[in-house]
Image (cartoon, rainbow, N blue to C red; front, side, top):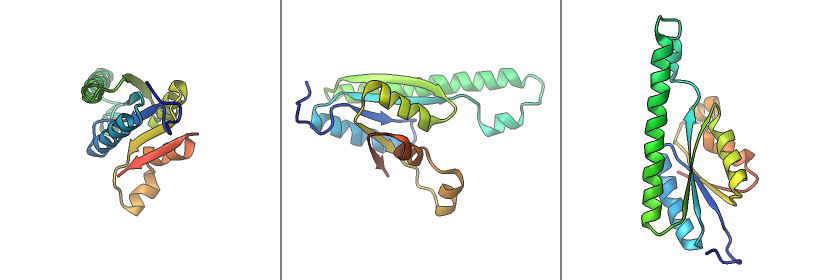
Length: 155
């Protein structure tokens, strides 16, 4: 399957369904095809609900609302993961799917990359202003700093 002289032998792409992550998926599929490398696709499901639901946490019945929102988010992410995997398989790639739940997506992405022995992580970066990026950072930035392998940040 993979040639011994191949630069990248296992590629991991992180995706959540946003437009910037779709560009990363397209790039990762092209790279995996070019290097004849298997593609690992990771999607992270948040541990907590949206900030709006967190604000409503003190309301009666909010536990059920949050549980429903988290389950819906898991289902949406799982469908997206399956769709990306099908897209890659249609190009003839060997694909593994990883749906993980985590409070910090970057930590989960780096962990999965390590577990599967990826030598390249491909991730999209949402375009933010300088102030927005400085205040909240980005998952792509955190992954690029923490990963022990090459990281391709797709804009």
